[in-house]
Length: 314
Figure (tube, rainbow, N blue to C red):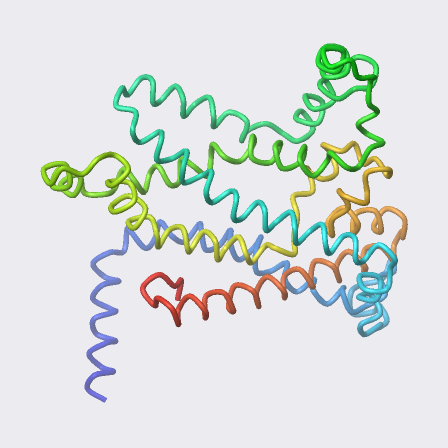
């Protein structure tokens, strides 16, 4: 009883001392509630037959019928395979590239050069996929694309209709994804590297350690917790895909679906073709992604917690 009273007293004391600080959090909590938590009540649409002109509570229940389209379509194996495999590449190859680039940037001692490189690699992050799709088109257009008009003739090859050939697109999409995202993600790790105590590097240098030894024994171990947390969060999105990357960049070409169809683009197509019914189907897909993401984050964090509790999220 006394311990509970002490905790309450300490809490009130902290609140009283930091009223200005806590008051700054209020707008954030309000926005989070309005735009993140309040809309969650719309989950119920996933279990109802959406009908225009009726409120959510007036719509008839359909149970799990809206989920059937995710698992009974002939395209189901294709979009599940593509979604998972692309995300696995993005997670693990991206981790190596992001950390590697961050370490290389941290080794640049000239501030002007370092900031210039950071600015250049960060710029693609702010580009819309609508713009990026036309940059890709400028390279891959059948008649006027740079590759068909300049690169292919050098090897004596004929022009290729890239938007009708699904085989090279996994490599194209992976390249575009990393070109756009690597700058932002590497700067996150670069900020963590900047927080490492410089005395550790000075002590290692006195002991005769070279650059590689400093990186493997100081930098990477210091980034371990951040790397694990970023990976856990990324695993939670393994059943989701970047709609802009897979829809805009490919120009939604049906011929490319064998290697580019993912759950988000499939759901969008169903939303467009299904009319009012499509809203219920899209809600079911979103609910499925959210539940799977929640389960994967908990599972991954549980495994990490068993191996190294200090690196787990909670």
